[in-house]
Amino acid sequence: MFTNVQEAEKISAYSYIKETLLESKKLDFEDLALQVFQIQAEHNPIYAQWLKLLGKSPSAVRQLEDIPFLPIDFFKSKRLSIFKEEPNYFFQSSGTGGYGQSKHAVYSEVLYDSITDQGFEAFYGPIKDFTVLALLPAYLERKGSSLVRMADRFIKASADEDSGFFLNDYAALAELLARKKQEGRKVLLLGVSFALWDLAEAFPQDLSGTLIMETGGMKGRRKELLRQDLHAILKEAFKVEAIHSEYGMTELFSQAYSKGEGLFKATDTLRVFVREMEDPFSWARVGKSGGLNLIDLANLDSCAFIETQDLGRKFEDGSFEILGRFDRAEVRGCNLMIGG
Image 1 (cartoon, rainbow, N blue to C red):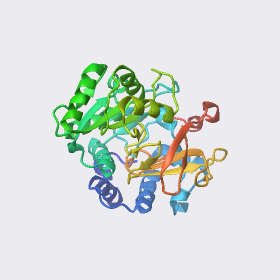
Image 2 (spheres, rainbow, N blue to C red):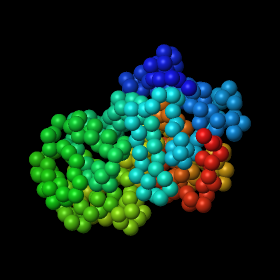
Image 3 (cartoon, one colour):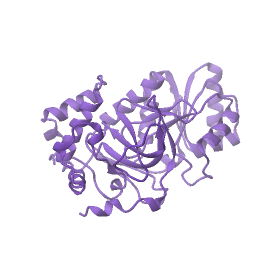
């Protein structure tokens, strides 16, 4: 384990990877992922112990397909880090699923901000060109939300002083949306799913041309809907051709985006794999549903190799969709295998 960030930055591999990520340089994803693996296999004690339990020697990992993934539940019970020092703070999940709260140690806010900027702008262009309106009530009401951090970053980068957060003042938001449409402004309306549904019911209006992006689910506030059903409601209420989506989580620094139909594409620092549902160490064929495994290069300081509880499938063009989550009965206490 590195004592602190300063110690790690003296290591050429670590400093090279971090510089590459911060400066948005062209990525050789596999090369960087293998370097990140070797760093975390040596310096992240929880991940190192997981590899040992699996009987996987780091020297035997020579390609992406050889890398073992750590079950995401470890973020609920362990501090996953390559450093001994305490982090600046933690990103924390809402815990609304009833299975505990995930915590992701954050050592570099600059890295997170840079990755979120790069990811969004690769899909949609400069953030400064948008009026950014964030409807995130479930997130604003608690501390440690990575989504709030991202939205705050976008709001501050926007050239429009009207950009900002909204809690429960749907009337003011609806009025501002109408005004911005009349002014011909590019608008990003980023909203948690249940709040966008509330807005659609209370203030339906023609928002054609507005980039409406849902994320975060219902958080126990409203009945769960299939994504396509929610999108149909929102498209009808707001007269838009597509509802966009953001896929991210507390355990990730990177995001994926969908421009409609629930088909996501990952940003340059994120790679998605699909494992067989019956065998977590085998890969599902293209187009077949299974569990999602993620490599997030931006998780340089924690753990970049995550076995999620999300179900999905991946297609030939690299796009993927989220189909739901594993039943908790299928998750067999993986975090109980490592004590301490």
